[in-house]
Image 1 (cartoon, rainbow over the protein chains, first blue to last red):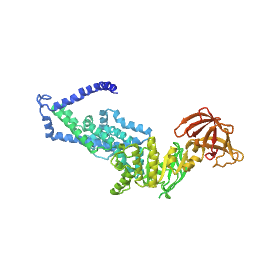
Image 2 (tube, each protein chain N blue to C red):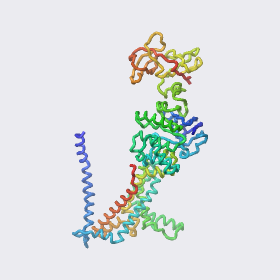
Image 3 (cartoon, rainbow over the protein chains, first blue to last red):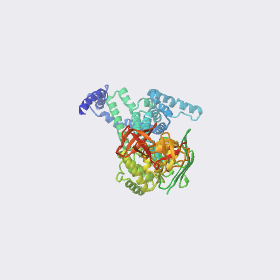
Image 4 (cartoon, rainbow over the protein chains, first blue to last red):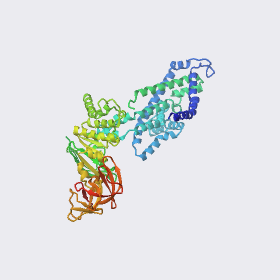
Length: 285
Length: 348
């Protein structure tokens, strides 16, 4: 046995070596570079100075502009996650229970947002939500409103667009979890005296929790780090952390501060995810 | 004290009739098996009784009250599923408490009853485990306990032993039967395994094509099957076509003259199928006095008995004899049929 596993292990190492080199060179090293950069000294007329300092981090905590942006970014992520969950769970349940012909159709519909580029999708929403957009135009023409509703350039618009874009990332994991539920469990619960509503609350929902967990984490992480959609829908008025990081790095040319902001965003997201997993810990797996 | 009565039950799926007018009374404390090949409607009957399927016609009476319009949660049934259907996200105690919680029983009562039923199925102290931490047999007993703890009117079991290995299956058969006797609950047991049905039941209900072919005590079903199909499905059977001779004292078959089964009565000239269990035929050395002669084609040693294949005319008969083996492959033998162990049914 061992005579066969030893060379096998060597071969396995050889097989994953290219991937390890790739990840090391293009992911780990750049990240380390960001950490180092965030601790560099800021300098006028240059991306960064020669010394080291914690000025970037200090600036974040000193200026409510940044703290507020972080809180708003997390808030947008949370709202998008909730919207995706509320829309996605019934959808996933429906798809799983549909007959096989309908299932493939609904599956295609759910995946369809992924077939169109994110820029195009977000632009689509500006056409719908803008002050001169389809919704406001129609309502104005019908006479239901006198002035355009504020549908864009605010949190609402960003959450609507992000939820649309990321809905598949909520639906697919929930579908996966729901598919593993043995249909006999529901019958068993009914036979023990549970109404359909109690079956849902006591059996289906808890068993779908692993899927809800993965879906929520995916959507939250994608939503807080989204750049294109907040830029197009939020415009100049709502700035999420990702938007500010790009501005700081590209427009203001402050590499240490930009790096610090990026790392603070990552840390905050990690913290929220860990807290969320703690709260929804699954003991029975 | 619950008696259950199914009256002219009909269940259709689209054009296909799964259950075709079944009537069955289950006395209090009776253990009844629904036995039949897959697709015979036995599981559908159980689902109708449980309320998982709506019936198209007929009535389902629990103590005279028609429960057919009620959803499953209002029928007061205990059901054990083929794959146990234990709730994986609840502990054993959580699984057992579920039915009582749905009935709004107080916490203290639930705790006592759960502990009592755990002892009943010999799983005391296992309450805090999760189902995946249990063996197949233990999961099976939890499923039984979960169905019994709510003290249902009737216990329904859907092929509960199908997923267990042979040794455990034998053990669980006795376990379930003993438990059922002690609790004294009316039980309907669905199985395709005739040995299971025979050993466990007070009454076996053999089903074919959505209809009841025979409902009787296991001995009756085996010794005096209602039809050729029942005889073939329940145990092994040699079936020999023949015509009742003049005077009705024998049956003439292409193989030779067969004795008239003791329990049967037919008019002369009736076309019948004689049913001879492998144990109903004895083998002796062929002599001139015998009417039924054959050749040993194959011989299989089973330990407790020896299975012979005997070619008689153009038919192959199964004969079981106690060891030691007396006849070699290729031997000419005489077959002696015991009229007390024979049975015959009129050929339709």
